[in-house]
Amino acid sequence: MAKLVIVDTNVFISSLLSPHSKVSEVVEYVIAHERIVLCREILDELNEVAKRTKTSRELEVFLSTLDYIMVKSSEPFGEHPQIRDPCDLPILMCAVQNDVDILLTGDKDFLSLRPLKGFSLRILSPAEYYEWQIHGHK
Image (cartoon, rainbow, N blue to C red):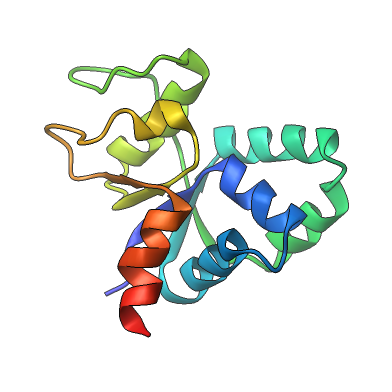
């Protein structure tokens, strides 16, 4: 069964900047085999970073063809993971509150949360996802 996956901004942008990289291969695999979950904060950050990296047009084309589930994120409440960068909290809450299975990221702040006690969310780097899902199936 397909997993719900949030692909962090840094992974999407890296894939756009290096279309023949292993990160790009991971993103393509996730698109084909999993269900991508996005929230407004991720889309806003994607657009902001795309402008800085001059990939706005590529991002626009990419998002126009991407099949994804749009979810709302809300303010943290009750028990929630603590993260160093408060700008990352809405994305983490989006994942936790919407029962996302995997957060695919290269962000050290997210990766440092592992293992995420009390939550089913798995936080994986593209390299880890590659070894676990793609390499393991070849």
